[in-house]
Length: 141
Image (cartoon, rainbow, N blue to C red; front, side, top):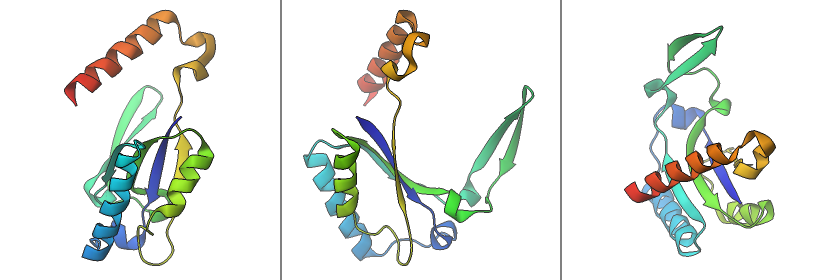
């Protein structure tokens, strides 16, 4: 099972406060554990929403809104993409994670959809296209 593990933004991360050397060392050690265990597929921190944009879709139109975005508790400050056997295993790894920020902070774990989750709507042609694209991406890595 693949899952996305999202680090929720805080007021400090949205203000651009950088992590301490100690936290960077702790996160690096944790990331090394994830890599050695074959769990981590990807992971990155995100710059504050003030450096981002949102695209809204409605009635066939698109509208761009510049950051910053109002609610820090609804924003993501970083993410991992993990390959685990179950949600329980993902929770075991999350329990080992250093707190991403001082004070109150949160990590959200969400499973990714797999091709089989789409049922008959995922035709053999769509599945072949998906497999082809994944192969191209893997070839670039």
